[in-house]
Amino acid sequence: MTANAKINIIQIEERKIPFGGACNKYYLDKDRNDTPKTSSNLVQIRQQLVFGKYIPEYPLKHDAPVIAISKSFLVNTLYPLYYNFFSKLGFRVILGETPEKKA
Image: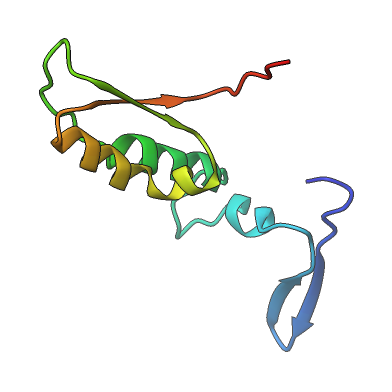
C-alpha cells in the first residue's frame, strides 16, 4: 500500500469498518478465511476477458483479407463486437498493441 492510501478504521459497536484510501486494495488483498483470495488487478482480469475469453477462433483462409484495428479506449470496450463482426465476414482481425510516432 502506498503512503497516499491511508486507511482509517471506524468502530461502531463491535463492527470495524475500513474508511478512506485512494483505492480498493484493502478490500481485495485482505486475507479472509471464508473467502478465496482473488487477484486485485481488475484491469488485467478485464483485458483477459475482452481480448481472450470472448474472442472465439474462426476457421479462416490463409489468404483472408486483413482488418487492422488500433487499440484505443473505445476498442477496449467494443473489441469482441468488432472481432466477431469482421471474422464472420471472412476477415482476419489484427489488433495494434503499440502506437508508433511518425515525424
